[in-house]
Length: 217
Ligand SMILES: [Mg+2]
Image (cartoon, rainbow, N blue to C red; front, side, top):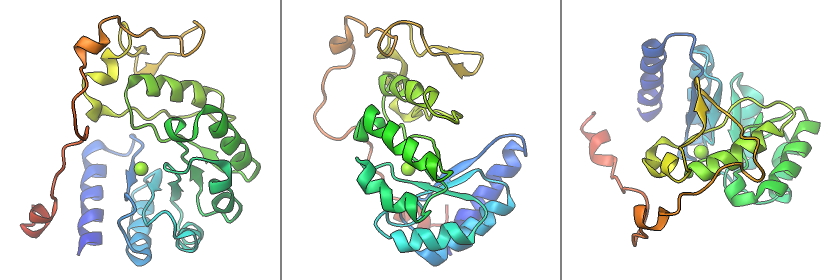
């Protein structure tokens, strides 16, 4: 039921945006291997670029099985902090694309992960689900890769995404421009603490999806 609904929504999305736009989707580790295989085959047919973390991250055998069985690129590793954690996934081709997060693994370790993956013909496109400053860190990381292509920018961060940088994110004509200045090449506004005071609790809004699914919406 859920795999059919999932794939149906992705087909609707593909029809809505046409064939030109690249599309990727995240399973957030919530599927079984069989569900993931069904969805991955369907996503290949509608030309999705990648299917991210379809099953729980520790199920390396499951990832190897899925990635060797489907055309679409299977990606993952956003919560892995070291090359050692990535190593068996790379060596066994559990992923077609690795997604270290520089906010978790750090820039230097992420470079090591990307270089090791590259030896196996595996590309790196980092997970980047933070504010604008981390988007800039990831932009520099991607620019240093042997096959740079895409930087993820987390839109649900709202104003913190751009207002954390003086002058906002340096986006020009749809592309993030890398500044020439040292470091990340951007400045933080002086009044950031007043603009964005610390608020106790989770940054996320917790949402219970079950009633929505049960009502078929
Ligand atoms: Mg993800």
